[in-house]
Image (cartoon, rainbow, N blue to C red; front, side, top):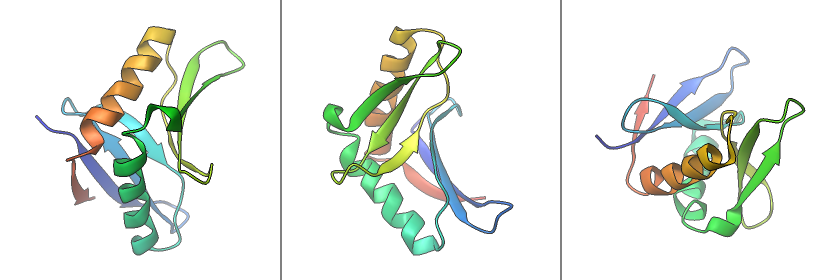
Length: 109
């Protein structure tokens, strides 16, 4: 089953997207966008930038768990992952974003 971008309106009235893997697990979440067109641009940016491993940045949370941020060419954050208990899990998450984003369909909730 292929991945998909799920677009939804947050409680704050902004548009967000989540990239879900084929198994339904959320592998990347966006920040809020003021318009649907900006949100759509964010999705296209994920499609493009996720294919360059240098656009991923691994971070460590205060509790020691790892997560990653996907950045655009200008260094701006496009999305971030969930928290991972292991470094290998985090790296697998980055690979999953690259694999799923390229041809994921976009659906609205």
